[in-house]
Image 1 (tube, one colour):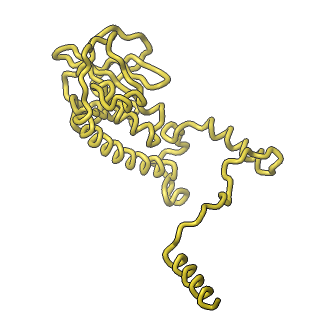
Image 2 (cartoon, one colour; image 1 turned 90 degrees about the horizontal axis):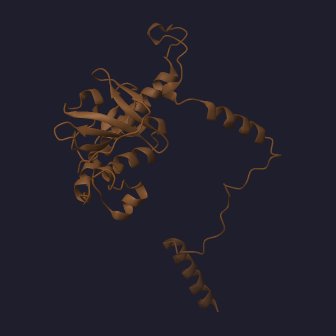
Image 3 (cartoon, rainbow, N blue to C red; image 1 turned 60 degrees about the vertical axis):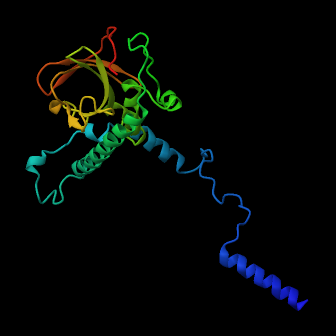
Length: 244
């Protein structure tokens, strides 16, 4: 009996030492249980949620003081709101550049030409449809960059898809734009047909004319007024061919 007891003890010690698998137990905490309305924190949370939903994005929040003339005694460390936005946009620029480079590498591998490129016949896939077909031409490949931007937290109101016309032959191309600057967005071309790097719209090469801009909920006609600036107006588009 002593030998058996000693043997079982050694087995248990070995299991402990090598981390033998055990049957998983029930979760200790359920994080997503329905809230209890009689909880003292319930009205406090509800009040915060309602007010927070009404807040504009940080980039649209008004700055109450003139940053150029900050009183160093009153604001010895500057404005937190400005520092917050500057850091956020710096990281978003780095992320957007990484997405641009990665999208262009993937676009070269997953390019599939459309048989019929007329606008009436050309099917613009959703992101799910694009993943299912595992490739497309520019109107699908643009979703690589657009999808990465949206899924990584870029807000709906600052990320759009932009149709541009190539002036040399009248064909259209699809890119994504990020409005860090409301007047001069960053252009992210997933295929590299218009630009191989992420540039401001004002820095884009000549020979391309913006036409329409849209996302999941809204669309605009883009009207060029002055170099480096655009004006948006809602109106329908006409039937044009889409560039490969």
